[in-house]
Amino acid sequence: MQLKQTWRWFGPDDPVTLQDVLQTGASGIVTALHHIPHGEVWSIKEIKKQKSVIEKTSLTWDVVESIPVHESIKTQTKNYKQHIENYRQTLLNLAACNIKIITYNFMPVTDWTRTNLNYVMPDGSHALYFDRADLALFDIHILKRKNARDSYSDAIIGEAKKRYKAYSSSRLDKLSSVVLSGIPGEKKLNVKKMKQQLDNYKEITHSVLKEHFKYFLEQIIPVCEEHSIKLALHPDDPPFDIFGLPRIVSTIKDVEYILSSVNNKANGFCFCAGSFGASANNNLIEIIKLIDNRIYFVHLRNTKRDEQGNFYEADHLNGDTDMYAVMKEILSIQQTLNIPIPFRPDHGHAMLDDMNKKNNPGYSCIGRMRGLAELRGLMLGISRSNDWN
Ligand code: DNO
Image: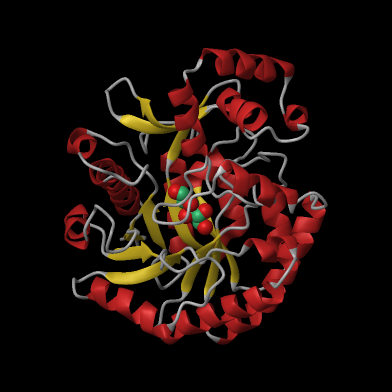
């Protein structure tokens, strides 16, 4: 059996329409109710509304990405118990609408973070890029985080200072807006708000955050078990601490801890090749083998790193990750199951006609469609040669 081909759609305002999605070859949709503020309950009415828009085509809403975890839950402050209760209610409402694969993450303050959304590739297409010196520049000179220098090597601090002097003010503004850009369609952070949020983490070490995460899981797992909901935890992107904040879903050790801390089938993962793959220390095949049949959703994306730990998002089959090996490993898990695991091409370059349109960064149509087409071919080739059709 093959994996199910899905596509992330940001809702009715997404420049890529559902009709476009049909032409990519995907048959499933991955989406969320982005208009609902973090922490509030998704009502059955709102869920059904989005679902019926999707089902007017032949597509189905297979995966939620994401129900955001409210910051108060991560820091266990203010009304976090109410927010956990709201989360449980949202899970129940989704289950009532028969949507049962839920992606989420536990990254403090920022979700995925990049420093350039238009890195020009040799073929002229645009990719997303993460550059440590640019991040340090933002952190030390724009955000002016206390003790920020402790997070970087002297070489990076020196480079950041040099660039801070050299960049024009519009380039500095652009850098801030990229670092703070967050999820399309959702509220953006600004420097002031980010500072306030960072303050809430003063006492929160890795082990405290792990305890808070475990507590959160313990509160929601019973609902998931009862309603056959599969939680698909997305790893940290990038998979290391940034802004002095603890990140706890970055390495194989983290994965091991999470799987065993609440050892329940509902506690599963979204295996994101791009996020784990951005660290040279991660062996993706070992991570896949460890999570095994608790992989409920898959993001396939490739990255190319340099020695400083900077990386750009490469073509799906052409980066540091051996996508053939990753696909083969996931497909072999698939053969032990009787329902297809959904996967989506994660990100894609802005290319060809994408470049004349407004796009959500990383989520243009043609670039992702190229990724999906390549991955689909790879999947078919592996399946056929192993008689796994
Ligand atoms: C980026 C995405 C992430 C992901 C969330 C999941 O493109 O992969 O933003 O959706 O982290 O909760």
